[in-house]
Length: 179
Image (spheres, rainbow, N blue to C red):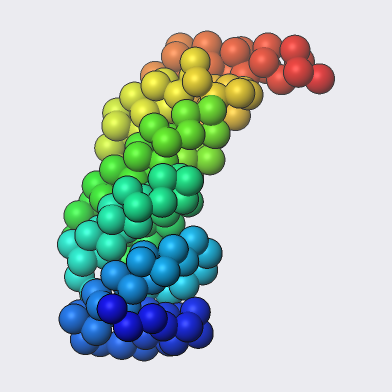
């Protein structure tokens, strides 16, 4: 297998439109144990790749380098949030936010980032999906006050003012306990 410099890897991931070339360079990068996330970010943003191809590379990278899985899943989520929103209703974005949360359950970012992709005009992803996702993180994250605040806002949007108020109180209680 041909060894590539990091600059050659970056250039291929950024500019190549030939899947076979990209795949070969990717395999070489894995074999060379390139663990810098930056070249892979360029790969994920390569517009010549289909969503399935991007997922293939991301999933393989997360398996090969488990220590990078959290960052890989967050990147995939953010890419699918931007690039596939009109075709899949953010399903891939939410899927990868869930994967990131499973990788590092104590981190709040995947939960909050998933909420940021909500489109109220289209109700995508569905509020119920986001609310359930946030609830699943309440017992896991280190500082749940931000999740309670976001849950209050989502429940308010869903028209459940009682639940919204309960989450606001919990957020205020959590904020005052930490302060």
